[in-house]
Length: 450
Image (cartoon, rainbow, N blue to C red):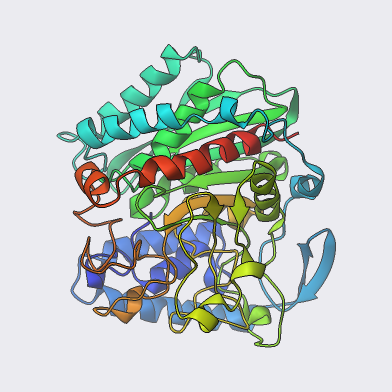
């Protein structure tokens, strides 16, 4: 996951920078990219945090003065409010009518957990350092070649596997895009995970699931064209996904039904699904008497409905609203259940009120798609109910992965030295496999939607 609040060391970016990337203060994708670049260059100075915060505060003030009313599409209806939220794209109107050939009866045929675990273990043992900082000496390029070799061995052709190349921050940026034409090639579904970083959880686990699914579904023609994208540069500000969205045509954006993102799905206590707009322009939700949820949630609810049809339990916004207020903890952890961000306008987080269920903090590769109007479904395993006695900034944000502060870095593994295969197996035996058994058939079902 994209690092945040580097002043704490365990998080690698400031809130202001996060807001810039997500489009908060009405910044669009281009403005966000510029803000990220500026913030990264300032990160080498001692006063980086203050400089970025002041800069973004000024931008926010300027944009607030320029805001005008605009129509926003929510659940097949146009509503109006004073905001700069993106509008859901044309293809999202199809989501409510989608179905999938993956059912509870044939679900085992579409569960590629065994292959995903094989891949995750390989990454954890042989491809530990996949970042762009030391490409000449680490396993970044070896990871790219390994992914492509596995795809080719499964039967994908050279024409289907494309390197999307760019240059960011003085280093090459290399996404891998795999295209599977659908029966209806006028629409597409994107499934993506970032391969860069140095953690087996973040994001060796997501990379493994994406690769196992592409290999497992090879030879099965989807109804809509599928694009599997292995993103580079996520840890530095979602650079690979930003590049991909920036090179999509208006037609590509309009015809993308949804984007599925998977990031850090191994360590966390709760296996979550997210969806819905969170670019911080959500004052219209901040009414304690409001039952509103964020816009752009059709894809989330389709995923939740599909999960239930596959025999899984789902604790979504309706089930989790007020749960913490009543119990002062989260639900009992169940390996057959999907969860989500529990915080709502009526029952917000005790501190760090960053966004409402079922959306999540805008800090992974779905963000630029969301900002372009493409709805997303996001898989992540973490713990929104956990609090840190060492830092309020971490509490109730979904950045702590477990209640137990004695493990990892105050209960956090992503973006820390503790994100290793050895720690995963020793501290949470069987957890990654249990999560794969949840996410794998659901991912297949969402990719094969028709």
